[in-house]
Length: 377
Ligand SMILES: Nc1ncnc2c1ncn2[C@@H]1O[C@H](COP(=O)(O)OP(=O)(O)OP(=O)(O)O)[C@@H](O)[C@H]1O
Ligand SMILES: [Mg+2]
Image 1 (cartoon, rainbow, N blue to C red):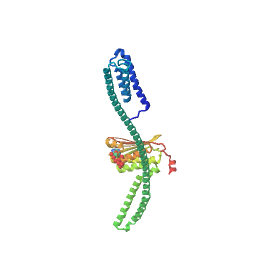
Image 2 (cartoon, rainbow, N blue to C red):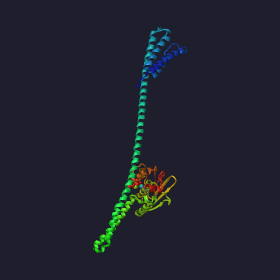
Image 3 (cartoon, rainbow, N blue to C red):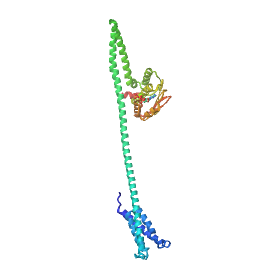
Image 4 (cartoon, rainbow, N blue to C red):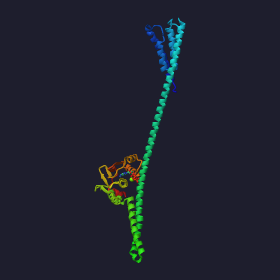
């Protein structure tokens, strides 16, 4: 319950007494119309007002003031505290006092319930404000956590690329070179296979074929892990090499539209676009059922636009919903993460006539001249 200050008390008691005095004066003014009968008419109003607005103490003071005033001014003989008809005077005053007390009790009960509901409202408002503050805090914490997760995932993506590049190099340089040496040795054996019996000669030539096959596979794995053309000749050449291999393996006809004068981009951007195309083509092969695909890459002053389309069965609406809420698909998620580093977004449009995946990647500092690239490496 709230505490009432001394100045507020003075105001409440003062107001109650003033209401009683005003009621007495009003009764005096109305005397010609109302006569001397029932002198408490206006005093009731003062009691109700003070009970409602000022509280128990001030209302009782107002009752006493009105009672004394009526006794003095209106009960005959007027202007004295004597009573011409003590029985009627006292019963009238007692009646006024009893009913006034009832009004005060009702007023107080009402004031208390109002006070309680105001208090409850205040508590509710505070709880609401506290809740909002906590939600704001949590949201800020969550977005900070999200931000650092994004940073982490970007760094992981970079590390993965670096590692792929390293493994690709190791496979090519170390295993590839050993295989080349082995192949030469087997070649020597093959040239002398006349000295061997038929089974021996067959084993040697089979081994030569197997070594060649392993060499081819290792080269393919190494190139897919990190196409050397990407560093040496740029995105367009690396994509052409990849698309040719993809078409051969999957029997999907791929049309690639990329301008001849397409300039070199930063290493991070080239690998991002390469992986985007790689993932989309893999998806087309695995999920679309399409027999053809189109890749279009072009540049304007501010951005690189990449679009990969197929003429397959499309992505079902349920799946699209899952994809847009980020609940499924490591492939699409990692594309999105890669693009986010450049402030770009992935757009997926799909219906029964096929799927189109596109992105507009702002160039910012993403374009580098071949000279700069050479210096950097
Ligand atoms: N071109 C497409 N045509 C039809 N459905 C597709 C196509 N591309 C993707 N999808 C659907 O979208 C889903 C998500 O693709 P996403 O590449 O993210 O994951 P995934 O290919 O299933 O697995 P992975 O993590 O190996 O890439 C797929 O499972 C497939 O149902
Ligand atoms: Mg995929």
